[in-house]
Image (cartoon, rainbow, N blue to C red; front, side, top):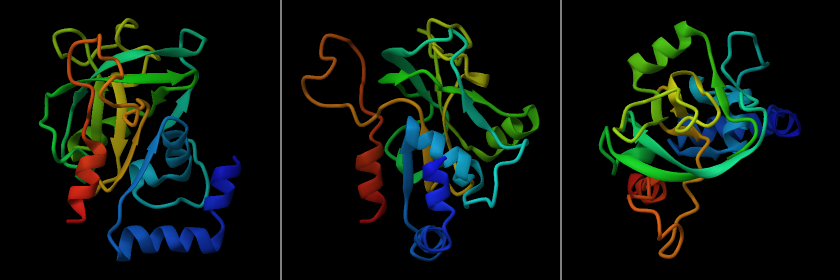
Length: 191
């Protein structure tokens, strides 16, 4: 609530609009940052809404009713976003999660719109790379296995998985790719 109140302050809201609309910048939010982006409307709409309405998506408690902390498999569902420009649709990446409120909920109509616009960026997936509701792979029971979404132009990315937790010796005993290349892609966008 504090973050959304802060960002809805006229001066901050105007500066965010300047960053996104005039300077064509990027904005991203991971985990709690994703929650803030959703509550502000920056994802999926691309701008700060004046208030939270019933038709907006939300992140809520995991259906397992407890905190989840593990590596999950994610599938790149769209690379429309500059944040995912170095990835291919269908790429599988293992990312860490750590949250108790990561369950993505939205109306069927909104999810259909997100899918049609390529705004569903990443999804939880099974061992075959298929988006799934199976709790072993979708630990919070997000609708349509959604792990991350973007604004309509893709420049605002919100996601639950901690893509920033990468490095040479992190999860080195777990096979597979661990880098969604969002930061490298972000830098590339400005070059």
